[in-house]
Amino acid sequence: MSGRNPDTSEADITTKLTWVRISHDKGRDVIVIPASTVMREGPWHVRLKKGEGGLTAPSVLLCEQITTVPKDCLDPTPLGGPLSAARIGEVERAVLRAIGVP
Image (tube, rainbow, N blue to C red; front, side, top):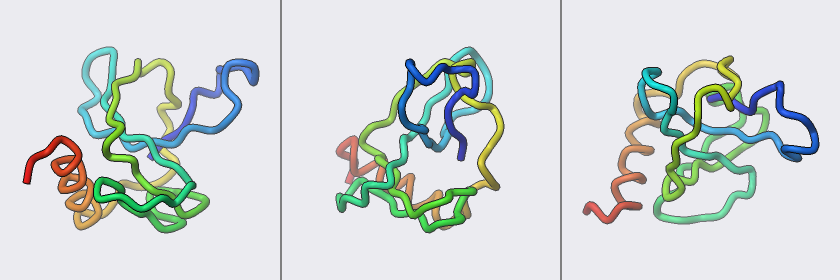
């Protein structure tokens, strides 16, 4: 898990963005899944507990909102350790549901 670029000014960003990187660290862009502390239910959302991946609050991964971002716009320092294999499996299934794969 990681967050925003510390060099971004307050005027440019008003909230701390948290995400899970799902691509390799090659190239200029990375593929990420954003996380939110607004705990909405959905078949493509994965709930994370406080402490998972270094989170400071319970959060939900918004697997229907996969996007790419330039690596240099993100803080390269993870908030914490990687998610468990079981949790990554949940993320994979949620992504598949989000893109319509049964």
